[in-house]
Length: 204
Image 1 (tube, rainbow, N blue to C red):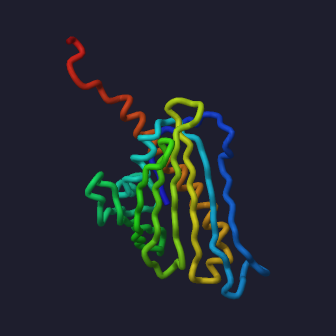
Image 2 (tube, rainbow, N blue to C red):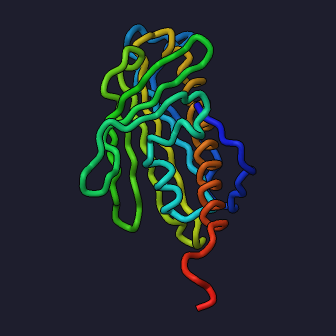
Image 3 (cartoon, one colour):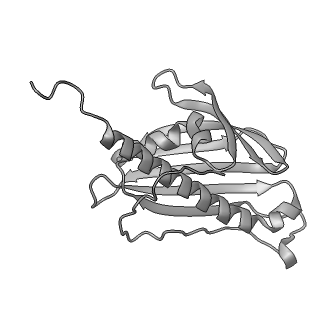
């Protein structure tokens, strides 16, 4: 869904695979399973050369997705949590050729033990999907200062058996495109923070 015109961010070498999509499903010939298609699950993990707070800000602020996610023509937040202003209900409008769909999701931004963060989005209702669930798991890199481990988990099941038959193409492509867009966004946020002049008068 997304694109941002900034320099390609440099990732630190890591033990984590750059792309590890996997799916748990049962299929028959040509991918049709007669209504018994399982939910698809895809996982992609990367290391971002950026501190956790930059990554968390990029992922949690859904209203700004339209600025950098390919094919995302609008993004909005309907409800926020009063205690910290984090979104609790948000949505995206996605447009590509004749395709124009709006997705509204329940959002949960959570702080986990070990200074980890989780951002989940569960589709409230949509005519294309039986289920649509996205989760970001973010944590500081265990050995590299100012770097973060970023894991994207996508789970979905189409209502259409035809769509389910080619869902592996959808799942793999979406996770890769989305991860790349956020990688660029985080790089941009970090660059802006580094370029910002220090506050206060340096002469004192």
